[in-house]
Image (cartoon, rainbow, N blue to C red):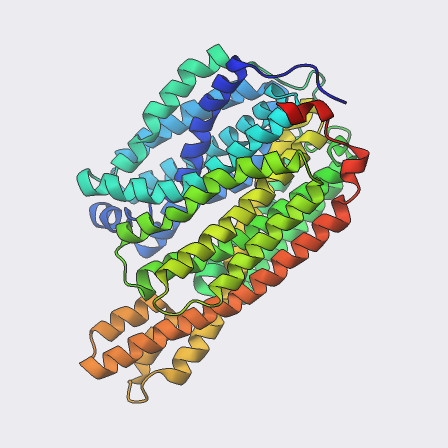
Length: 512
């Protein structure tokens, strides 16, 4: 049925305010890319500490999403948003003025905790503020585009800030935005919470953390270091605790994830499709970032600036997809998004070692397809959830994206690296010493650096072999990504083909 309450200027202004924390949380994923050398020099960070400076944020964010979404339903989503904004702002100042690596790691962890409160709170509040189906779909389309754009913007903004200021300035960017949120959110954003919340289940919190953190850690390290038995045991332990978590949710009255959420199959299908979409997206990002720098030889800031061009298309794709979905079968539009992304990977398969324009076109096509899927399935999942459970629903959508991204990087990174190592071993100059060849086999960056220190023809041959091997690995991974995305299109049609007939879009919305 058509919702009688349509959002007005106040709700859209509040929505603009809610985009602030979303942009900052997504930017914080990438804002440190260029700051690592300066941080390492000033704080004397070891290689292990460097990894934790990056990963502590991601682990806290992924591990606490479900918990914070459930907490927001109980205490109020706006209240949780304001608490998260306070923590995020304070941790940003602490990170900017960190005196040692341990202090920076701790501050990054608190930033992740704040991010875990902000993301489901903002999406849950969007679900509550926009009761009209068409308006909610439009808002989530903009929301999805802003999140994707924030990741690209973070690396560029970080590079620009480092051109003029010290490394701590990349964290201070957050503070003015958080202050604006703390001032305007109480004035513009209404409070929403579950009127009949269940008891907060601490055991479920522990099980969810025990399930998520080992899996995310295992797949992230596999992406960076390759497969090994220890990392596999981490993943298996997390999956076992995940099974215990599911059993707990099914067997207790005070479950952290309400069983009501899964009564409409669109909710579960939306989470699964969102996970597949992010799986493909991060698989592409893993290669294209390295391609711009180590294959084409672009500097970090130049590579980041080129990398923002596909984001311009993303800003249009999300809102446009929501308009099309109001006039066409949503399952077919979602499937089309998967097919567009698959076409982007097909373009990526045709690139060579000097294909800047073609690579950027491929990235833009992939991103447009993925954002189309993410915008529509996020809206579908939230629309299928009861309004009082919007925080929990949003946290599950976000958790699916985190898992999909981590798995995509691990899977495609492992495939690409296996091809790279095979090709480099086969095609590298035969006169290379064994130690030099082993160093070149580790990473493309290592191979290019090693080649620069070798005599002219030998160094040139090694660099060319490494670049060719990397591009071949990217092509093979693109074949796998295409298969995954085609599967996503088939699943979307099979799982959702009758949804529009069962839940038709209200005819009145087409005129707005």
